[in-house]
Length: 325
Image (tube, rainbow, N blue to C red; front, side, top):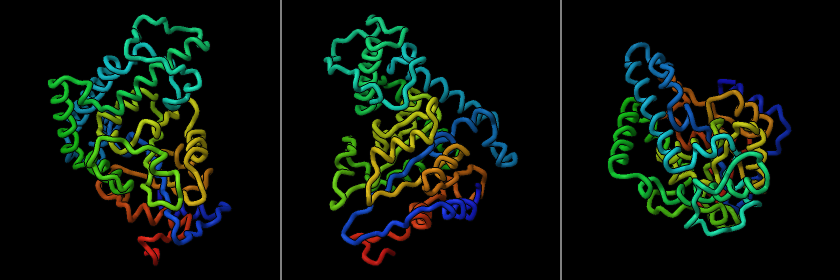
């Protein structure tokens, strides 16, 4: 399903009741994003397919080198700041997955290198892993500028700019689109919580960006930070489908964020998220990095995303949009 007509016909064949769009109720849109080759470019840089799509106008070796620099930086940050060497074999689908095992212990003086985390994966070790996940959540919220030294920050910022220039603004366009879809301007480092944006359908609230990636959880969180997505996607909204699959993640998201006035839209480049979206009766937007593709970055707009939503749910009417136009 690569075309809008294919996707819309598939979704309309499912029994989905249109969203009624009652007046005076603020509709909340939940945008579920893939990461690689959607909000960011990495795999296609490493294997040269991004450059190949431009028919020789892009230097493939430069793209591959950029990809390798990202790989090195991601792994370095994972190992030095996010316990990845210790917990690589303990992937979970989201950071709070083991919260029932977290005893709330003060972690300020915790020595994570000598607390004995090991197999078997019993309750004691799940508690130790839950402690690390809570520490990782705190680091994510504080941001990389509070973790990295000035030399590494400059290396990171230079690499981001190099990548954005090479990809014709793909990274900055993805960030801008997240800002536009959520309505969250970059004016504060304080993350927006699910409760403040989603608790009352009668209040004016922001839409929600969620990330579901097929990569393992900790590197995916680090990539969110390095590619500057963390001011728009809070750590509670980052899911790894590595072991459980995207359909399971989508089901969790619907259970957690769903409601009478909530609409979901999936944006990605892969078959798995397309099929999972179809199972959920949600619209799916397929991203393609090929030049002149209609759905790529830069190019994809909130208005076009709204069109996909309205194909499935019908027009929405709000106080600020009384005619639904």
